[in-house]
Image 1 (cartoon, rainbow, N blue to C red):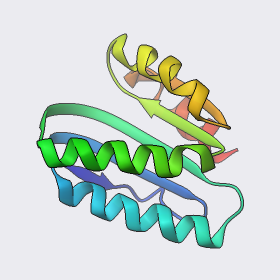
Image 2 (image 1 turned 60 degrees about the vertical axis):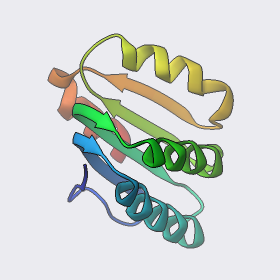
Image 3 (image 1 turned 90 degrees about the vertical axis):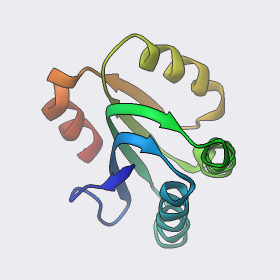
Length: 118
């Protein structure tokens, strides 16, 4: 499930990932991304990953569509979560992202928030 965080405003979309990811999560995210792209030249994405307990197959397809439709239009992406997998994913995404991607550990939450708000 994606929970939209209070940091979301103007050109920043912020959400937390916890539990099972469903197609409806991407529908909400898609709407926010579309709105932000219409209203702002500079766009930022902030993602806190608390836990992922699975992803519906249709949600995986939505993830791919949303990723490739919007990733090139983001200027900054902050990803916060546990483990080395995040670092690997951020390196894999760099060829597709025009902006800057930074990965933070869970104990660097405040640093991530400060960086994304710059």
